[in-house]
Length: 166
Length: 283
Ligand SMILES: [Fe+2]
Image 1 (cartoon, rainbow over the protein chains, first blue to last red):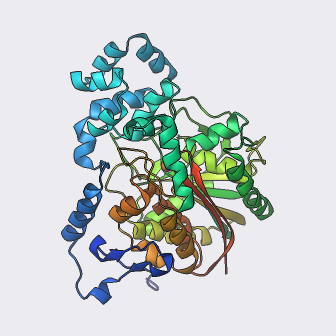
Image 2: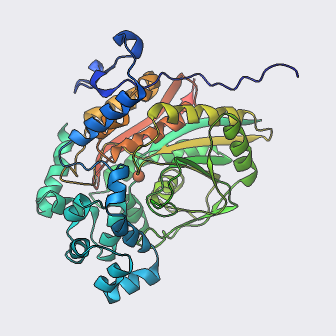
Image 3: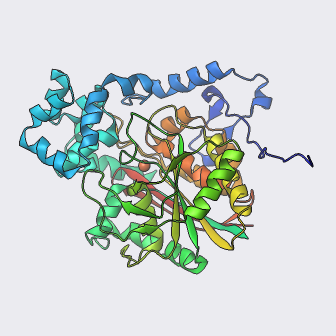
């Protein structure tokens, strides 16, 4: 009945895989070669693998993919519960017992009780959930960052400020 | 007829909200950032949008890891600032526009964007901080929001994240949907998140202003180039959390290919985040 309804939007090309993406400090030299230029189109599997390989190769970075999200689900779930005032009070009343309610492992419980931020991240904690625990102690993201870097707060702030010169 | 009248983009950081809510925006640490926001406030004031579509990611307020919508949209009458773990922000409620929300949902799904629909939702700093930055007074103060709002959420927490190209296409679909809305409505689209920052791991504190400046340039001159950046590359060049920049591309996709940058501000840093802001008009 009648004319066809055009539903497609002008499509940006599929992303190239990261080996072919070059970013240079000189922004004029920014380049992202298109698939046509490089001659071959990587398969979906190749693109996914390449992207993950790159993200996992970053030192001091814990790609929050499915495997990591599953790894310490109870820790993240416990931290998520701290978005409610009554839960924050229950946590404060008996931290270890509160962790047990969410089935945290003994090791994860220790990381929580000791506020071992980098330990929580390594064990599968996600920074946005873990940070809700930091908020209970009125600890800032800069404190969490400093501890993850094994730095004093002053050293970490100097590291942040050093980026101003770039 | 409805029309997208402009796009604005900005970083969203909890501590920027705390600075506004505790009245320390003129402290030496914060003053350069808040002074830089002033021209952007003038820009949106003159625009007088009826509705602002806010593209942001939920950071563990409405969305936990048990179910993660890649793209979501609010269809509520009202949105309140929620408790992310440090209490709700002391700001007025946001009025929604359910009629336009449902129109967007219908038109986005018809364009093959299968949005998760929220009839009840609270909003976190990803939403409220940019709203205060653009619509608040010099110190972020607000008596009543001068615009209705529609939240659009993008998953930027649980990998895999949507591709930059997909985010841009979502913006294009939003543009088509708004263009097809019969009521006279002036719509502002706001892209939030980024710029370069990393919060997790020993690499936390990473920022890369050169990458951010390249991104700001290409937002005007060659957004298609930005849509080709894989998320692993965003993580490498802008930090694990800096991949939030894909949300700027939703706002950019809703604009013409040719835009004029009306204003830009870039400041290192707001806590761990390189804070960028820009205002765009169609050419
Ligand atoms: Fe964010």
